[in-house]
Length: 416
Image (cartoon, one colour):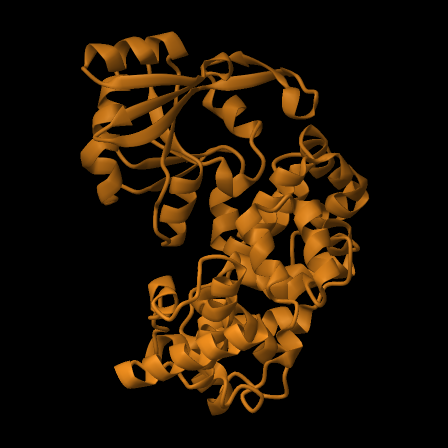
């Protein structure tokens, strides 16, 4: 049954590029609506970010109208009915209504259509299948408004069938639950996810990575991950033991520290205890080089306590850099006896906000002027001088720097 609600006061719908695009497409017998996440977020009172549009017009007609209006249309997925329209420098995906003819997982055979209900019914979850007309009328063909009212993520139709169309929907079920739902997951959906869990092994690691990194920064990430662990799904994704207590503590210490939720740091709290864990996560999720390096840099988190770095905190920050220092300190904090209100841990974590490490002030010329020729001996002199400068707590006075350069020069010359 179609349910109606109204978003007539939504500024993003009434003004600007989206309103102009809808006006362009809503004529000569064609209709266009905003669909998906923008409608869901607006009804939930959440910020509306990316906006997608669906239309009865065929892709070629969308391109023609946009070009005639002086705009730019890029056929990013025209064989599937999707055109990216650039309007006021903002990309908006416009997709022609579709109906499944045959389904082969992600390679479903589709036909373009004009039936809004049929298009809605081929989507994944009820809360993602809503559409809104230019006048603000929200159209619901699958019960999404009711599910939004009770904060529930529910598959459209038969959950098992929806999952078999694309096994990534298992992770999307939990990700959307963590972001938008309350209470326990929908029972039928959860049962279907458990029954279909072997399908996770068929997914590309890049797609799994994308879903997991989005899930772990959600507001209800911890209880959702707990359900995944109890259901035998989280271990399949991580390939190891999850540390849920550490993960929940990371959320708390991020809040105490004033740090924004960070997906890589939270992944470290959830899945990394030793270097081998970081290497495994890199492979299982095909992490980027930067993400992998951050996880590997957590390896010696267990050496960090406020007491152990009381005298060497600045040298550790100089050596690691602000991001790695913060990652390692926050992870160690999550696995310590100190709670989120511990003042010593907080002071250590906030060191990068109080102090910026200076650049090493001595240069090669300072040592060649002392008779050291370019080569391995010069490199040794620079390293010895830098170590002495750090140990002396980063002096900036010329006399102190001269003394450090003199001493390092003598030491390397004596050893040469």
